[in-house]
Image (tube, rainbow over all chains, first blue to last red; front, side, top):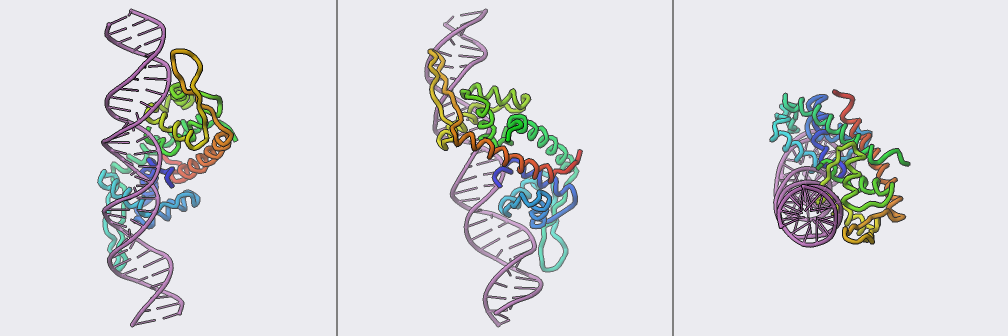
Amino acid sequence: MDAVRGHLDGLVLAVLATGPAHGYRLIDLLRERSGGFFELPEGSVYPALHRLERAGLIESGWSAEEGRRRRVYALTARGRHAVDERRREWRSFSAAVDAVFGAGA
Amino acid sequence: MDAVRGHLDGLVLAVLATGPAHGYRLIDLLRERSGGFFELPEGSVYPALHRLERAGLIESGWSAEEGRRRRVYALTARGRHAVDERRREWRSFSAAVDAVFGAGA
DNA sequence: CTTGATACCTAGACATTCTAAGCCTAGGAT
DNA sequence: ATCCTAGGCTTAGAATGTCTAGGTATCAAG
């Protein structure tokens, strides 16, 4: 999924906008919501989560359940704002690409 | 325009699908057809052209006009095929991203 | 004759995704 | 008891591709 480059952060934020999730679950949600299109490796998603947390757009806590350790991420206030921003950016970007590709086959 | 990463080749091919062009002109066409969205630096476009030529999707020749030297690029047969391929790929990619972003603000 | 637009090229910086490994728990199968 | 698979997190290093920033050169206009 190299085509996702530059858009992954927005996608992660978009998923978290619908509720907190831990990394592994997030990968599943990205696959499900994209109709199976996104099969992102952990090595892409975990660094993205760390990046977003450093940037203050998400925050995390370890889940209290015994045994399985899970780091659960949720949007911060700034993160909620960022989702709309990224979605706007995506829409103008995708409109621009559509315009260049035209109505061809 | 870092968001273009991974999609630039397809965009270049799409422009050349409407007729041959030299690099500088191509940059203009990308700006025009995207409604001013794409302001790509030469340092992105020229390497992309070289890449595509090495890959056999486009071919070039120096224009005969005196003075101004221009390397004019045109799609090869394989390049014409590749445009449709890239457009299809773009459509499924953009549908996937749209699905994840949802209908939010 | 200097400036600005046209036109091409490229080395190195930079950011980000992916590969590939490692570590650990839980639960079912052998 | 032991192995295997799935769940779950992490990170180093490779690979890729865009951008920065510089260079070269022609030509027209002031």
